[in-house]
Amino acid sequence: MIAKHPDYSVSLNIQTKFIFSTSGSSSSIIKHNDAIRKLGLNMVYFTIADEVTPEGYAALLRSPIARGGAVTGRGGLKSSIIPFLDEVEPLALKTRAVNTIVNNSGRLCGYNSDAIGLQTALIKGIEASGIEIKTAVIYGNGGVSGVAFQVLLELGIKATMVGRDADRVLEKKKQLGIEHIPHFDGPYDLVVDATPVSANPDFLNAPGLAKLLDGCKMVFCHNMPEKDNKINYLEKYCMERNLYFIPGKWMYNAQLAKQYRLLFEGYQKTDGSAISEQDVLETWNVK
Image (cartoon, rainbow, N blue to C red; front, side, top):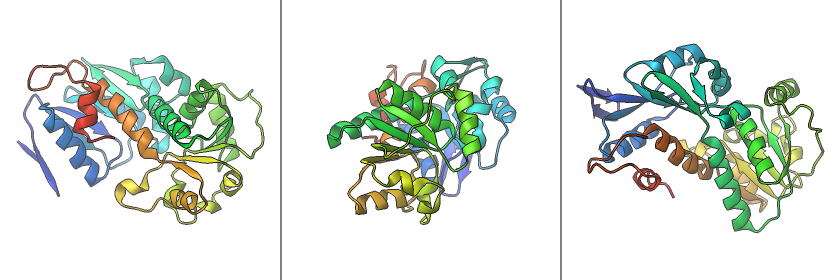
């Protein structure tokens, strides 16, 4: 059987396993399926265009055709899906964010690979720039914000969290159990943008963001509009003002390597060898 996409097609049989994702462009569908095919795996990467409920997505991932799936931040799904899983790693519970789910013989196991991705990106940026980072502010209250807070703590960076909606930020802090940690004012050395505002040319109108950027030394942007050949206006802003900018792709590349190691655990390449992290990096052309 051939499954067709306007720009792509893949072969299926009754043993084919699906890796689902709650987001993804045409280019990502082609990229992921090409990489899977190069490894010789009988799997297909498939994106879901419509909004899904946590219960519905969990039911889909529990089906016999599913190997697992990626969970994006839309609609708070990274947190709301947790009660529908059979097992969740401690880090994902602590950050209240699952972005990778593996179907192990019908049992759904939740993981967070965003943390290693963000940690890798921040360390790379700090070391490359030579800039000392002592304080940071997280802008946003989605799934990445909890991960960011945990990563910053582990790096010894004093962190606080703000956002476009103060009530939602407070609710996020309560979910994370950090509402008792006092807020402190900037200027901050590092701004971690965990929102999609960088795709908007009017991003500086986002409540409070312009003030955070004023006086900071470094900016990390989780959003990647450039992946779809769109302008990253926050990156452009930083380049024009000589602010050190850490692109989201540095996080994405590192988390992708871990995510697929989890999804491919127990599977082998065509030569019978186990799939290593290096195999994933090379097959996805990640640098």
